[in-house]
Image (cartoon, rainbow, N blue to C red; front, top):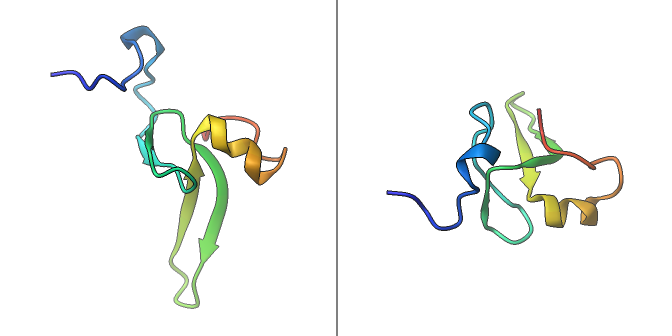
Amino acid sequence: MTNPTDPAPERQSVDTIPQLCCHCGRVTRQPVLVDDVHTPAGEGSNVYACPDDAVLFGEQHAGPAA
């Protein structure tokens, strides 16, 4: 079963893990890394946005996460 919000198969990347956009909350298959969060314990996490919302975080976040 295919989700209607999934991009067409020829546009999907097998390397990209779907992520939640930190701004709009939607799942994106083209996540853009916009921040990384560090904690005192040393464990950190990455913050992703969809391509449409990534521009809200500045020009340094212009493309999809690798």
